[in-house]
Length: 348
Image (cartoon, rainbow, N blue to C red; front, top):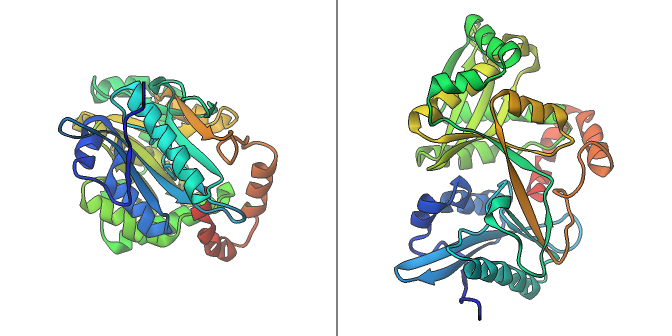
């Protein structure tokens, strides 16, 4: 049976966000996709399959440059799972095939489609890597039920400690608040040995998403009036995603991150959506433990590649080139690391 026709265009077709709201996630929203294009200068392609009343299946992909050599076609950069929204296997296979054809036509070296493993096996010609899981906290039973899933001697205890220390949770929305979050993230990312996003990612893109009720910024104000930590949450129709968390190292004893994360999780429960703690690889033992202690249930992810699996999402993070690069980056002077934010666009 022939595959259905796939239309490819640079802008979201009519009905795109309606489909994303109904069956997709935050990462399928055109505001996010177009924001990535504007912030990082990625060429973007909207692929869609028509139905009786508009588009029935869809996938967006962006061309992510390499430091050396051809670009990659990724669905989507900085999005842990943004593969096809497909109403049947034929439409899904057609979107995969269209992505591979697009890569051939534009001389791109690889296609990377990030999806949830339960969405089905990849079509012929694609290789699958299944190293990552994301960790979701169910919220349908309410705040009290969520609290019971938190690890008692660590997570619950640290939340209480942070609340007793006098931390006040505030929402930030102006340019100063987003600049503060950008500065916190620069310091935290440097300590983790990775480049931070450029400041305009927070001050422009995140602020724009917040104005559209698709993101939120939580800031922890300490008893001395200073901001000790911040977290950014992406807000989809069915789940909110813990996107960034950063803090000043000297404030960690007060547990500001615990207070912020618990506040965001409670808000998600009130909104009737799941709370996603984000992805982790199995060798990231500390990160996996952190997410499970917050009640996260693993949801396996699948990254599908054409013509073969390769790149950052296939490599281990605890040894080899990634581990070496992380160690080197973490010892760079902070001023140098900040200027290195220009490298962030290559990591998508």
